[in-house]
Image (cartoon, rainbow, N blue to C red; front, side):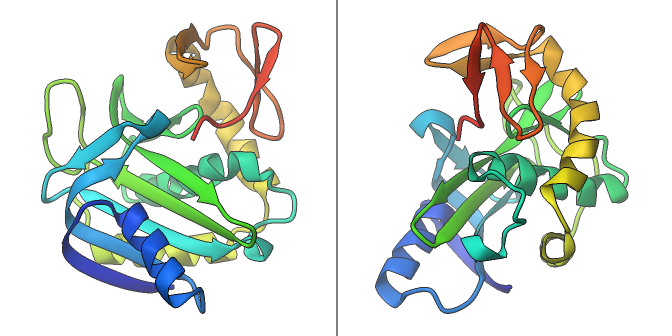
Length: 211
């Protein structure tokens, strides 16, 4: 994975998509920036980021994803592997279904995944510094470049969705105390049932990752 570091960008996700459109895809690449002015959040919302936070987007070929991974749950897969990397460094970060990063009861970031015919693009934003009273920040100090290198090494060698899911389903219990926005409505996850493909059963409806 080649990592390109930019000083400032509107959105690492948009920048990467445009780069692929203009130059084509030849190898896995990651775009990260020190400052992001118009990042893409859930449901089309803007995720604006202060300098000092972590913003990155990367692209992989679908054929290199685990064979047992449902594409609709790729965000959970990518997010939980980053969570594992940060946990190994001492963070208490946890992953709220489907792909929001939390410290205790405050959101500190999230993941968005999009796909083309052959490629999967993933964008991740994480607060490393204070943004506002509504959001938290990571509880450890990290070296961004080193963390990304470790993340992509772990991503490369993860064997299966089954392995990730076996750990994530334990952590899912924390999500039951929160809500998720489904069809523009905030729905309690207290009675949600997590399926082995990463979707949930709630109000007699099956729902996959929302981004």
